[in-house]
Length: 191
Image (cartoon, rainbow, N blue to C red):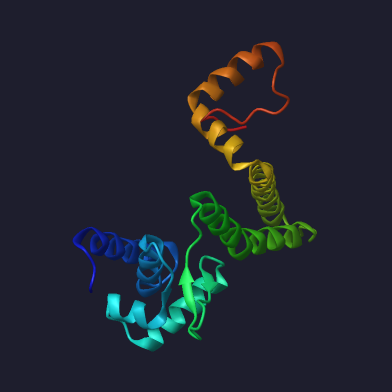
């Protein structure tokens, strides 16, 4: 690797974390390198800096493009493709969440809805049907909340996140005036 110690440590860590996030180590390292670079890189430059084979870099770049995590750039009088990441960290986070939702949450929600349309034929199936419904409702609640948050301008979202526990205190005070219509069961207690 032809990177500074700081860059190398970040790139190696991102590769290790990538495998925990569902992408391979090479893809994670390519993304980390592109994220750190001030200027777009072409595939040959990525090969040179990371020491990967050209085919691994090409496959990694295709995967990152499929996830909408890298941007393709062209430079004047240069036929090669150059790659970079968005400058806006919030755009990266939103893209990651959108892509994971499309790939993981949406298919699960579709399957849960499909299963909910079936009529239970036994007490065991009735119980399973009820639990599937509870899970579907929770996921729909969370995806609805996500959609609401995703529509917020970044500045407003940052302000909301910065509120942290202050928001919880505010909700507690508001509940004294306007009781919540639906309350989650207390931890350790069954409904």
